[in-house]
Every structure is written in structure tokens, then in C-alpha cells.
Image (tube, rainbow, N blue to C red; front, side, top):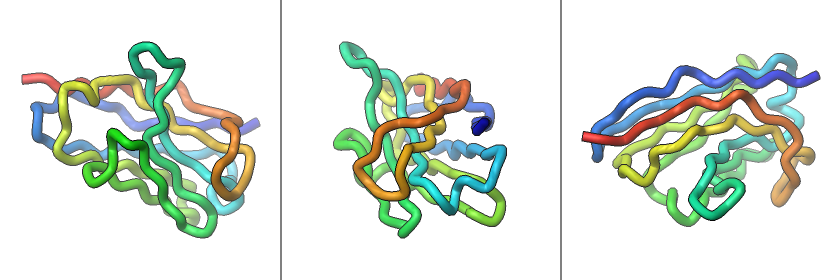
Length: 120
């Protein structure tokens, strides 16, 4: 059973930066696409970013140019560097494993989530 554990989020001022990390319980990071989701008003969830096994990165429309996703397969780690944060980025962020190695792919497993609050 896959386990994904996110790092602790935090409170950041608008315009600030924060890096989230996620560690996987097994050597899944070299086999599957992994990424981040967050809840959104009026939606079940909002796609944030994904990185495939071929290192292709894809970002949500509200994210492009501000966030950077990366992975370290040797450490089973996933990262999300968030810059130029806005109050509307406030959400619980879920580290997510997808069913396939490429994109698009359905969700398969996710962590408990970590809260990011952007506020002055």
C-alpha cells in the first residue's frame, strides 16, 4: 500500500515563497507520474502540477510561472516550490500518485494533505 506524507505547510505573506515536499513509502517515484492537487471553490479538486517518469512537467492554469515541481527518485521525494504566492493559493495541498507513468492519468493515491495559508 502506497503511503505519501507531505511536509508541514505554513503561513506565508502574499508575494512570499514556500517549498512543500512529499516522501513516498515505496520506490514508486520512478514508476508513476506524481504531483499535487488542492481543493477549489465549486470544484472537487484543482490540478496544481504533475511530473511524469520522463520528467515532463505540467501545471494548472492558475499556477503557471509561479510554481515549480520536481522529483528525486533516489530519495522517493517530490517537491513543489511555490513563489509569488497569492491569497487564493490558500488551500490544503495533497501529494498525489497517479495510476500511469505518463499524462493524463487518473488519480490513484494521495497523502493526508498539508495546509498552506497565504495572508498578511
